[in-house]
Length: 418
Ligand SMILES: *Cc1c(COP(=O)(O)O)cnc(C)c1O
Image (cartoon, rainbow, N blue to C red):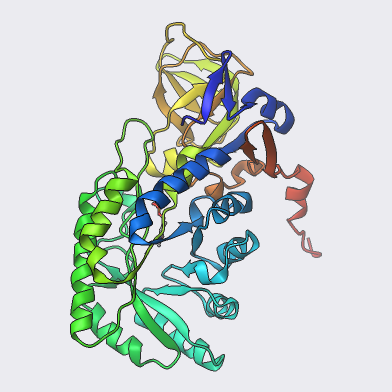
C-alpha cells in the first residue's frame, strides 16, 4: 500500500490529500492510485518477460474504463466474462485480438457479438457451448478460436466461494473428458481449436496448487499431441494472491519460475489472467464516521460505507486493514467493530480492530479495496452507487460520479393501471 501514505499527519493517495478528495466528492468513495496499478503490472510483466507470456487483465476485478485503460496503456489484454465487460474492454482501448472470453454460460447473443468483434479466444467449458459457438461461427462464415477450459481437480486452498478448480465446482471440463472433447472440437467446422485453459481459484497464497495444476495441464498437452492434435496456446488463468493483512503471497518472480518449470518447455503461447493481483492494493475505500455507539459488548464505529459499497467482508469473511485519515500515535482505544448503516446484521466491514478514539466526521480508509469492490456494489437500501476516483501524482479525477437520487428513482416505472 505504499502509494497511500501519511504526509504531515494526513493520509494521501500519491500526492493528493484524501481529505481534499472527500471535500470534493463526498463519502464514501473508492480511490485508486495510477502508479500502484502501473507498478503491479510492470512487476508481473517483467517476471513473465522471458516466457513471452500475454497478460490479459481479468476485468471483473475492477472494470472501470479508466482502470482498464491504465493497464491497456502498458500493453495489457483483457479477460472478460460478459458482453458488458467486452464492451468496456473495447471502449477502454484493448484491441479485440488481445481479448479472451471466459465463463460457463455465454449466450448466443454474446458469442455472436464477440465473433463480430473478432476477439482473440473463447475459453470453452462444455460440449453444448462448443456446438453453439461452432454453429454461430459457421452461419457467420467465420471461424472461432477456442481453447478448452480444463477442470484439473485441484484444491486451490483458498476461500470456499473463490475456489474454482475442483471436480465439484461448476467450472471447466473434467480433465479425463478433455482429450475426447478436444478431438470432437477439432472436427467442428466453425472452430479452430488452439489449446487449453485453466483457472483454479482466486487469492492463492501458495504456489503448490498452481504447480500441481500446471503439471497436470502440461501432461494433458503431451497426451493431446501424442494423439496428433495441435496445441499452440495455453491460458493459465488468474488467482495470484495479494497481501491484505499478513499474507505472504508468491512473488511474480516465483510464480513465473513455476510456470517456466511446468509449461516453459512446451513451445506454446502462454497467457495469464490476473485480476486481483493488479488492482487490489491500488485502491482504498474512504468513508466517514457517522456515530460511535458503545454497548456492553462492542464499541461500534458506524461509518457511511456499507456492505452495498463493499461486500467482501460479508461474502467472503474477508479481512481488511483500516487507516485513519489523521495519523495517530496515541494508544489504542477499546477494540472497535466497523459497521455500515445497512439494515443487515452481516453489514460489518471490520469485525475487530484496535483504533484510536474516533469521533463523528472523522475519515477512515479501508485498505486493499481495489479488487472486487466497486464492481460488486449494489444500491441495496436505496443507497447511491459509490463513486470512484483515480489519482495520478498531484492530480485526481472522478472516474465514476455518484449518481443523484432523482436518477435512481427515475429508473423505476409505475404501471399506468396503478
Ligand atoms: C476471476 C477470474 C480471473 C481472475 O482471478 P483473480 O483471482 O482476480 O486473479 C481469471 N480468469 C478467470 C477465468 C476468472 O474467472
